[in-house]
Length: 441
Image: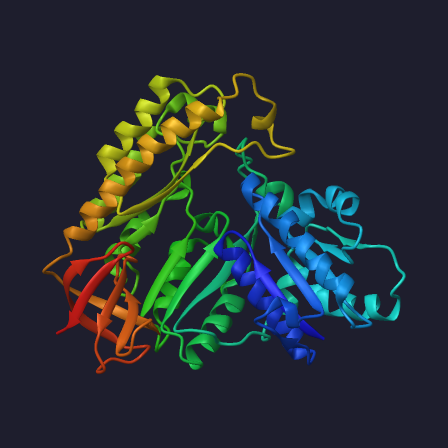
């Protein structure tokens, strides 16, 4: 069949979509870049925010129009991912034309289920929503293809933290860590195909606790050291981290591993201890600031990004000011901020003192103005510096090439003397709306 995949949300969803694609290609299905040329449409969904849910149902309506007008005997629509797991009953009720609903820990079974749907075209909507990722990764092993110089590699899934606003434990299950051997094998495969940079992924990546070759469970710092030994790997990153799980060994790794980049996405969500407690984040603002300071003690040029939720139930003006003050102390290089969005099945959705949309919008504007000014200042401070840039793709214009520096800033260079995959010294000459502009030294 001719398949089209749309991925919503986080990097882990993108990784999963790529693995679905690899499995389908191994079964001789053909990938389409245009949804209108496909007769197998897969939406790999995210349920972190309500907006993503709304986008899905809008896309499903358009997919159904294509299905109704198609001349193909077999036309299959599949909803996969976190929304499939958490809202499969809504999907079945609102979209009876959907052929299969597949949770994130069942996506490895999609190719086999397609065969079932073709052979039994009158069968009811197929629902697969178990929460065991072990089988998933067993099927993924050794079936993946190289796509770019910079690749994602999932090392851990699920979460045991149960933050009161988050659906991840209910959509991806409890924490599961892949073995060191599996991860190293996948990394070697990527490197052999030309990958220069690997970003390790996990819902709570620094709670990694995978089985090592010595029969003991390894922590993230040990895994980072093991991967740093691989010949050909030039850069190493990891995301997303929970502040409560950042230890001194991680800080030392940032100091001592040359290919481990001095940039960390460290979500704080709020600067208020009262709100953090209601969120069940299991750390305080003081603990968060201690972690930031420790990392900067070991690696003084460390840069940070973060996630923020404004308007969490019960958030007062004073709570919000605590967040603003924390942002001013840390000075982020970039960040993501959102209005609180109630999610089904989460305790926060049932809390008293829900904040009005008007107040949420006002607070978000204030926070984003501050975060944007910090990002702008961080970018401007790069002007005149010589920075190492890994080039990952061609630019829009001829002789233009795009890459990222060590701090994950986008850098654009006009030159015909650099190739994708090169790591070059670039003098930063200016800033643009979305990054930096430089010239080859």
